[in-house]
Image (cartoon, rainbow, N blue to C red; front, top):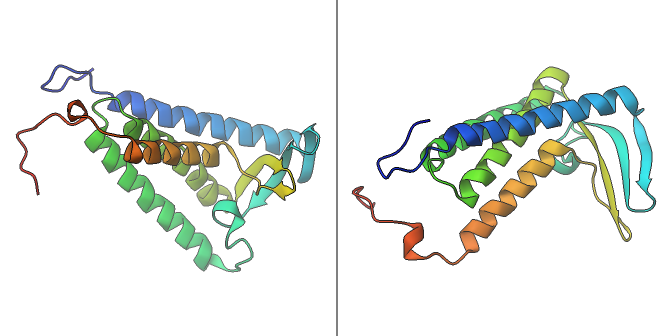
Length: 177
């Protein structure tokens, strides 16, 4: 594996492996659900708390825009996902040399974005199958890719609000803009 000038291992290949693992688990679980769970409410796992469902989401996160007809929304979601994927790849390239919550969070988001992007391109919908109820609130059905995106975003927020020490950002020879 490549090393940077300060003798630490370049973690970018490992981050891409994390993204690939998210994509693989997401695809495998969606395929399992499509084969074993009929469309609709699915199977109760924990009564009044958790069930495995089988929902085809043609919209965005939490089924936003699912009722929109035509290809415009579909194509916009695909374009947006593709642009976000490219931006995150660039961010991983830039910050992924050393371990951080940011780099790991970006890897999770990348895997989730690609997982759902694949579904949108190939099937024109995303398979959602995790259904959670918290007291009287039924959370919108989601999947492994959605979970990875949310966990990754949470890690980015933790990194943003975490107190920084001077050792976290060692001085570089790069000019500050």
